[in-house]
Image (cartoon, rainbow, N blue to C red; front, side, top):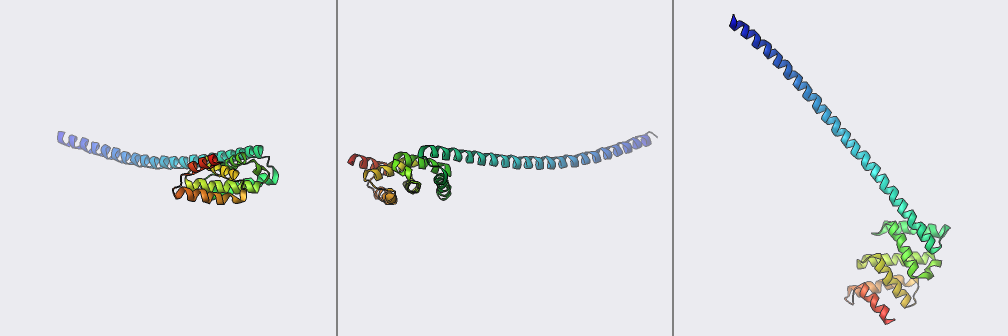
Length: 193
């Protein structure tokens, strides 16, 4: 009798244990489902955050470019079609070189400051700036040093914008052939007068 009662109790315990096991498995399924949902939510959040960051960066880049163009207009006096031409040149050179359009616009300001006669001719300003970028990239120097080297050489020899690429070639070849680096050659031209 006692054995029979014990057997009944064990049977009840097994039923309870089976029931608890099934509930645990069900809870495990819910947990896995929630993990999948939370991973999906986190992934979607990351995508949205990345998208917002990209839009913010694009907005800030456009804002910096417009600020550079406004500054360029103030320095050069370019407005209307002339300013639009420089803007399009900055975008085109920014796309074709290692510089951004904003850096190209800053390059226009550098060149205009170093060679004021270009202020009245935006096409010549763009031409000399493009040659300066070529020199900077070829000689692996920054834009400021390239602008100084090229404009000093052009001014020293009373050359115009149409000669800018010739001077870039001379400076680059001289530098590559060991005559001295661009900055050294620039200093030599300055001292030679």
